[in-house]
Image (cartoon, rainbow, N blue to C red; front, side, top):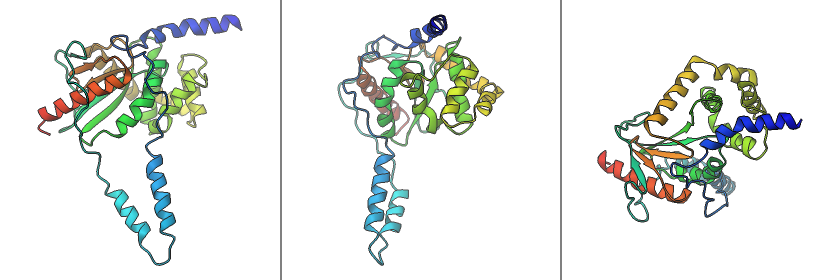
Length: 270
């Protein structure tokens, strides 16, 4: 038994090496450790309240609430906070950088992460509410680290979850399964598919998706983008394919990203 644990630990070491910020600072514990409530909770609570109020006879409160919910506009851009970022200190300009998946009129933000990365797990609790507040002209993309080796199997798992339409359902639970519940037994496709199976997906179908041509092509694209963007660790943020965010803390990374998003929005004429 001890020999088995030793072998698993030795296999995971390359993944832990990748779990660091571009400048080594993203491993700093966030200033706040209280996780924000999921963004979906607030609309659900508002809907429940509206339904309760609509219980009065002969009122149209519920239809009115539904209409308001369907016409709620996306958050509007807000001015970034704090001092303007300094090139070389707060961000690096990527030579010849271009967006990973360009969308006309939108600023792209890519997070390169790994489920096996403790820093990425901590960052997610701050990143998720920030992402939920992004205006409609920002295209946010999660991208698994595909640096070669065992980590590529996790990248295949990520793209398989997207292919099967289950990503939103399993993204944060996968973090918890790996980082908190310690469900991962190894790094093979079978091991990873088994964890997704425990999250409610069909493990056999999931493994088939992991080995598909489409998923392998996506992993290759992600690897090329990471190499072009000079990514050496996780978590990392890349804004519009042009800027690699540094930062002294997780919050500082998002502050810098806000400024770079505003800069690119102006460049796009927004």
